[in-house]
Each structure stands twice: as structure tokens, then as C-alpha cells.
Image 1 (cartoon, rainbow, N blue to C red):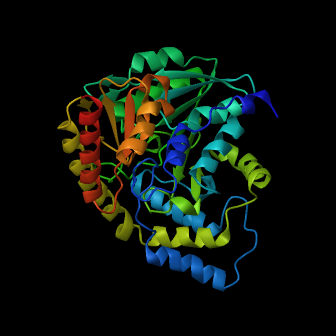
Image 2: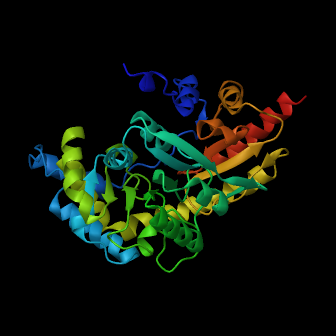
Length: 387
């Protein structure tokens, strides 16, 4: 096996979750998904498709009906997006990996804004790229971007900039001014941008279009920009593995080939479910966002009342990312919380070395009372561990 693969770091989130497997008494908030099942009408669309015998291969780039539906959906939120720029993928993870495969050669330089979901830095490394990280800066529990540092890191040698906003795990979100500055800079350096915008609808600030600022709002179809999306978060479809990419026209033929050599296509019955989700998005996503805001506004004030915790309300996403003073090893703390308090959180150093001492709490809980119980367990554990 290649040395790069052998040296890949195993998921610290999975390591913590594995420590709690088989324990019914653990309140689990470690994974980035809601505990609410996919709406029944979305599930029924997949059932109907299977009943019709739609069990065969589809077009590499996705069913034409789904690509049209995605384009119409995107065009309601942003300037018009043509269906010819949409590639359907087998999940958001697959979308991101395909984008990296399309753009990065071994030896290329890639810059990523961190802390970030670890797949985003691992994917270019798997392909043999050199990954440089530019860290967000924490101030009073809130993470912010040092734009000058990012511009200094992205040069004409930088093949790709990877940026996730709204951000997992911090909840940080780009401002429109920051986006414009980054796009202008990357145009000048000739650098591609891979924008992971899977959390764009999970945004709690008031906006005219009901989503976070997107690079699609300020770019042209010919820009060196690839935007990744997923049905997972906004439509409660994490296990379905369905996503999409918005690409420049110049990449579409090559992307079809890449999908052929990776997965051939997304399953038809899953795509039918996606079509139904988009038809009835107004029944799903606004409710999901309103509930997540309720969960955030339940959890964060409670955490702020725990001595030794620093946390700020996330503008977007589904996570509270908080610093736990007096504890330097996030992984050790997360494992102890599982073993000693029955509380499952993700360790901050799973997302970047600079997030050591932080913990991520996914607040996408169907019952907000579980969040209250979780804070009580955290508070009790801290009292016992410090006495």
C-alpha cells in the first residue's frame, strides 16, 4: 500500500464513537447529523422507484430531471445556474473528492482554511499534494478569518484553495466582502477555489435569500470555482449519499469520466428521492433551520453558564464549538466524557492542531431536552474531575 495511505490519520471522531458503541446510556452528539429521520414523502419516492424496477445504471452526471431540479433550486437562491453545470454525486464526500481529483496533481500546492472537517485536508494529501493550512483565529469563543494571512498564503504556486463556510466545526461564515476579496485574489493568482457550501441553508442570520453568502453570488460560470453541495444536512438525508457539484462548463466532460471511474453514477432510486426533496424543499428546509436555531439557542446559553467553557453562538451549521479551559488533550477529554459521563462529543484536534482543547457538539437533536441533559452531564463531570 502507498505510504501516503499508511500514514493517513484515522478519524478521531470515529475513535471516540467507537469507545461508546453498545452503550445505550450515552448521549451521542459526536457525528454531524440530525437524529431525525428523512421525511416520509422523500422515503416514499425511493420506495416507488424501487417498486418500478429502477435498479439500473443512470447517466454519469445524474438523471436529467434531477440536474434540472438542482439548477432550478440553486437559481432561486443565487444568480441563474444552468443544469449543464451540475454533476450529481454519490454524497457530498464524493463530490469533494471528485473535485480534488479533477484539479490536483501530485506535488501541487493546496491551501485549506482550518479548523475544518478532516476529509478536506486528507483528500488532496491522498493525491500527493502538499497541503498548507491557514488557521482561523479564535476570539472570545468565536473564530474569525485573518484575510491578510490567507492572501499571503495563496500565491501563483497555489493550485487550489479549499474553504468551507459555513464551517464545520466552528460555525464561522464568510462575509460577502471576504468572499469578494478571496475571489479577486484567486483570479489574480490563477488559483482554483473549492467551496464546500453544504451548510449554506443552515444559516441563522437574516438574509434575503435565506442562505449564507455563496461564491455563486459573485462569480461567473467561467471562474476557476467549484462548489460542493449535499442533500445530507438541509434535507435530513445523511445516509442516502447524494450530493452535487456546480462546475465551470470546461470541467463537465472530464467530470463525467471521473464519475465513471469512481462510482459510475448515483443510484436511480436515491436520485428520485432527491427530486422529491427539491419539489418540497419549502416543507423541509425552513423547518429544519428553525429547529436547529432553537437547538442552538437552547444549548449555547447553557454552555456559557458552565465555568471554564468559552463558546459563541454559531452563525451557521449545526455545531457548538467550545473551549474547555484546563484540559489540553481534546481526544483524551472526549474519551473520558464517554466513559465517565455518558456524553459523546467530537474532539477539537480532529479538525486541526490549533483546535486542541476544544470540543464539537452537534446540536441537531430532535428533542432539545437531550441537549439540556448533556450540559448537566458535562457540568457534573467537570465538578467531579476538578475536586
